[in-house]
Image 1 (tube, one colour):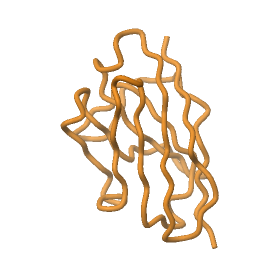
Image 2 (image 1 turned 180 degrees about the vertical axis):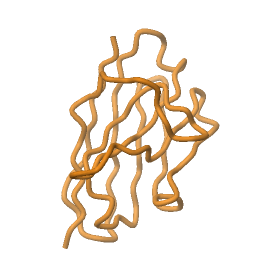
Image 3 (image 1 turned 45 degrees about the horizontal axis):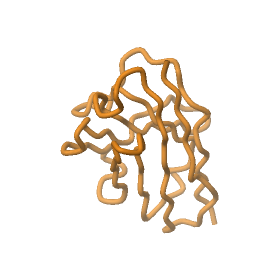
Image 4 (image 1 turned 90 degrees about the horizontal axis):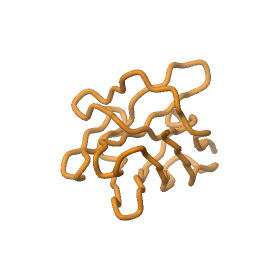
Length: 124
């Protein structure tokens, strides 16, 4: 069973930075899985933000965050991170990580075992 623990969210002013982390417990070795970050704003559907391949060599980002966000992973620590710079109010939402992200399209198959997420609020 997958267990996910996200952290690092908070309240930040526009233009600020945050670094999110996710520690994952997965049925198979962590380095078997692609990993992704997803976010859900109030009243909106969950959307893919960024995905990273199992070995960390391939990444992809939503157009809205390209050039501002950087995804990385540490397979020795079962951790995936999302460094967010130049934050905008529209980045506000609850951020979740998940295994099995399809890197080219930032999509995820049927997945229901979400963690509690971490809240990011960008406001002056």
